[in-house]
Length: 470
Image 1 (tube, rainbow, N blue to C red):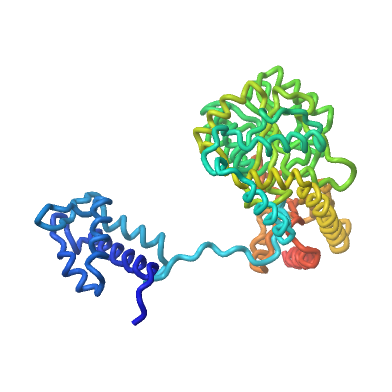
Image 2: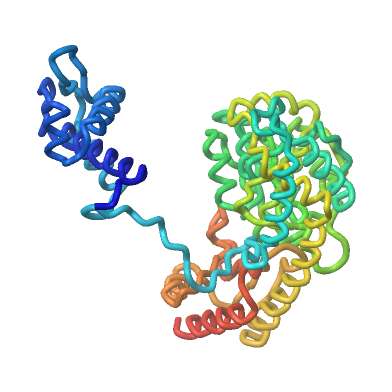
């Protein structure tokens, strides 16, 4: 018989621990019952007595057993619905006898998900080399807690330089807070600025998760319609004052329009008059296909606007690094909130990203991806035009990773989406992002970032085929 390795012993310990705990939950060993001796159980299971002692000590530490000097180990009265609790654990952790539940399967097919980057073109090799170099030169002190919840200073400095060069934003590193993606930034702002009964004005349509974040505060959501010039500022509420207005001015999600300069000035005037803050989410506008990137709304007012950016689109979503540029008035309360939530974002990825930006790898990657996305965008536009002709109108394609295809047919109240999914093709009707329903029933939001050109054409043909059958 081969000698037992530490891993084998550890597995055996866990197995016996789980078995005894199960028997306690199921009532095999009822409350107050004395368990067999460690020697007897060791003989029964064919293991060392020391292993059983370890299991008993664990069960005693967790409150399942009570050790009585000179008498043995007894089951503690746990109270509650022990059997029901255990069966729920079984459902969570297993799918059958002795099997572990598998994670949900990833979608295998053609997915026109909007605002999703090309995962196959992640600069993994360069990122790995940068990470190794960054970790090699990292001081041991960087492996502890960071006293500054705002994040790595060099990364914040680099962000300021990038924003000045690409967005016309002038800010100090002390005004930048690193967050776990744009999602955490929005969640922090909603928690700070809103309480139940307050009002928040948001673009309609908008990303569904944004709606959920604001709803979670108990605030009243005021949907404001969007047209080809962005948020219709004239439709902002006058009967009550919202605490904040959420906008995506450089590339509205999901309709793709750009907030005009006239409306930008009008929106800032509204914020000054009502005392509300503007939350500007700039999620993917660096991928602009004609001319320079659109300057940020925050360029016009640094004290009424919180600017939010992310590296999920221009690098990869799993990085989970975003940031916000904060007015001085909100800086201290947001830093206190950040420290309360998670102390600070993980430092080592921030150090790697800072170096990645310093060595201009991010700049070169964005330039490369802009060429790739431009080809995919042109392929999608050409494919839609060739197959649907004058039955499709394309808009919102000047920037970003998706466009809007307005069809002659409606996608609401039909089985088109379900039939396409049976063919392993995912599409996204604009209506799924709306608060007020019925305005965009014939529009599809079509992402091209993570779809190759061959799959783009196959997907369009499948959409046309399904629509012909309806």
